[in-house]
Amino acid sequence: MNQPLIQVSNVIEIFPKSKEEKLEEILKSYKISVVNISCNTFDNFDVYSLGLAPGVKISRLEKTLPEIGLNLKALSTPRGRVIMESGLYEISVQTSKPESFSIDYKAVASSKVNYYCPINLGKDEFGNDLLQDLNQLPNLLVAGTTGSGKSMLLHSIILSVAAKNAEIYLVDPKSVEFDIYRDLKCIQDSATDLDGAKKIMKNIFNIMQNTFATLKSKGCRNVVEYNSISKDKITPIVLIIDEWADLVLQDKKIQTDLCLIAQKGRAAGISVILATQRPSASIISGAIKANFPARIAMRVASAIDSRVILDASGAEKLAKVGSGIYLDPKTGELRQFFVPKIDSVDAEIKKLGLKKNTSFWKLLWG
Image (cartoon, rainbow, N blue to C red):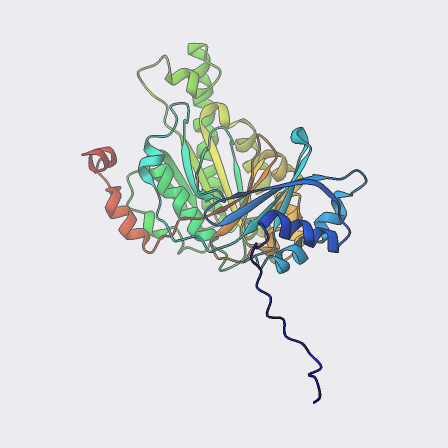
């Protein structure tokens, strides 16, 4: 009787391999030697810490990240980073899709006392709230293609700073993205064209100069120091510009006006958030990058666009809408995060009581 050409094994693996053993086996197949491997499991990610054997090049390991993700059945291309002080290489592998979540306004309201202007970016890959003090950044650059979740991120930032009663200035060349905020008591001015944007920048510059005079009269170096000794508090001022490319293509001189505010605004409690769908070198100049150390890339079209924003590739590989990479200006580290889901901006505004002549804190805390 003829035997079948292919023998089907009925052997059952009694002791399944651990995650560390599976990754080590994959690395060996690509002739990458490691001294040790450990794995920490979080809600949506497995984070592997590798001690590389002498002679193993980081560049070689990074080139195999797509293959590692394929073998581990990851939901997106794994991200790797070097941890110099520990002598380790860390790989983050997404194992499941994060559940949708709403903005945690109470986390914003009860944030650290030294957070002059807290913003809620969402949750990081470990499931923690990603709260940042906008005044410490002090300016934020955001990029992402259509449908990447960039607008959702901008809405969550606006609602965060509005919840802290910041004075907000909006520039929206599309004329539709920020129109829903026109009745908020914290909106000081808005513009939809180049002339209106220049007028807002001029007004903010004048406010900045007056604030400097106030600080000087009290012998204070910044608004945080001033607020700690004065009863008359200086509130945060946030300028948010969407579709920056539309303005630059009309008049490149507007970059000079913006940089004047961005360079000196932190001491006066003024921050700028700049967003664009076209993160090319002609739109994001060297002067802009120098004054916007904090940057976020949602999904972008190419690795070149990712490098313009983050000085590193990776954002072009983001799969899920609302997933982004945050460049922390303090540490220089790249952190993946997920943006809060906002089904209706109008419903969020009504829930928070941010219409004119309504107290947010009274409604939130009762």
